[in-house]
Length: 237
Picture 1 (spheres, one colour):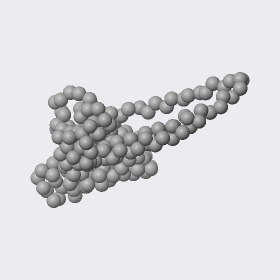
Picture 2 (cartoon, helix red, strand yellow; picture 1 turned 90 degrees about the vertical axis):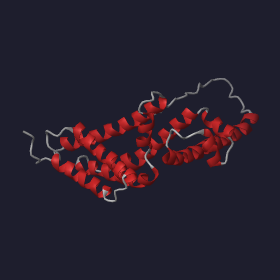
Picture 3 (cartoon, one colour; picture 1 turned 180 degrees about the vertical axis):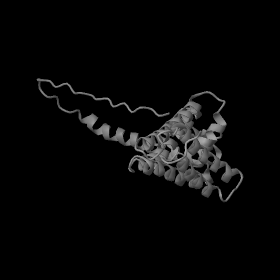
Picture 4 (cartoon, helix red, strand yellow; picture 1 turned 120 degrees about the vertical axis):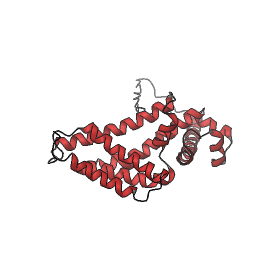
């Protein structure tokens, strides 16, 4: 899912011979081609945005080119032309969702100092996003339920996205421990596991059980986790 961006550098060959005159036909067709390409990219992005909203409601599994065509008031062939398959449509949604998640949760938190300030920022940003998703649904969670036992590119993309995020969360815990904000004995992976568990429990409590106090309990659980792994926390016997 998280494809590396490869930058290809094209170096132009210079010649000592007479400089050729530009082809006027190319100078006219190039802007037209660029406009068509830009329009195609804009249309594809509009489709992905609509698919992202729809997937939040019905899940990735029920996302189809036919349904999306109805939502976007486009023909099936028009939507299909931008993706080529239902699976590629689903992959595009996973990539877009992960990008939104990174932009809203991860990158803003990187502005905070390393240690507890950054870890708190990550959790606060995560909770802010969850507050919205409690109404629309989380693609990572619904996708895990739908694709947990279905090997393939969509499952791989979902798992890769979640693993990348959990790695970043674990890294923030390690940094908090390294700067002395947590106990030297703090288990970073265990702490990240528990924080992730708070978010999963929150979704279950609110969306399924309709528990109105779940958000406050999640915040309390996070603070208790920090205390338990804090610098002056008592060590287990």
